Amino acid sequence: MTQQIQSPASHLAYLTAQNRMPVASVIAVRVAVLLSKWAMHRRTRLTLKDLPDHLLRDVGLTRAEAEHEARRVFWRV
Image (cartoon, rainbow, N blue to C red; front, side):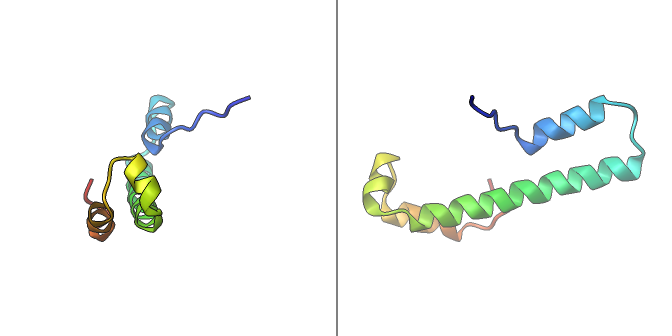
């Protein structure tokens, strides 16, 4: 049985589709989603930097491109 991975945005859509939430709750949820996305960007970029060269070639990247991507700030997509 495979488990479907849902993005933080889909969780936000589910929560806001339910009963009306207070404005402060909506803001808190959106901030949490944003922080979650930023953390995911940072983790994946650091992981990319640590990949061996043969795996980087498999995804079509050079070592220099992986290093450049890893240096990007986490809030940039």
